[in-house]
Length: 198
Image: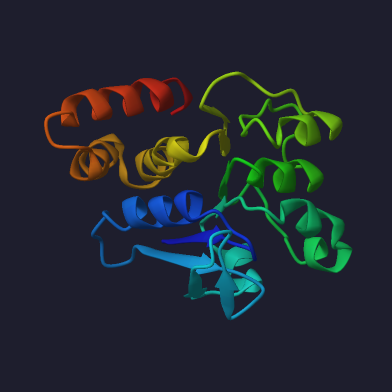
């Protein structure tokens, strides 16, 4: 089971790395989570440099793909050569997008008939692409999900885990990362947000 987190130059650390951490809470021999990118190294919106672990081709072949966000998402969707490499398919993959990642799914035609959640900055661009934007942190339809707001990334990660490893695995992953003294509240809130879409 390979989950690729598509990450681009100028990425938002909260979106890609929180999901990366939570998704790696699943401990199964065949479970693999990777940061996938067109480049070997990326610089985040705040200057953090990370080495990537998978290519765009690897991401297109993954079982699940989470599209992260960042300050240069509009540059990504304007790059026809780059976008043409993103052969994502919800009939064979789980797809999710965090914040401005929804714009990438929209431009790929993968949100047709699916409303989206995204951040407030990206909202007008997603709407301009013809996708209605909901005022909520998470939505999914069949194999496509979106989350809006950096701190909703754990909802997206929980949805991926619940779909791929079961609800109890999702509850366990969120419980592990939730603040002490608030664990049950965080788990309940996460499950309330994703359960209607499982």
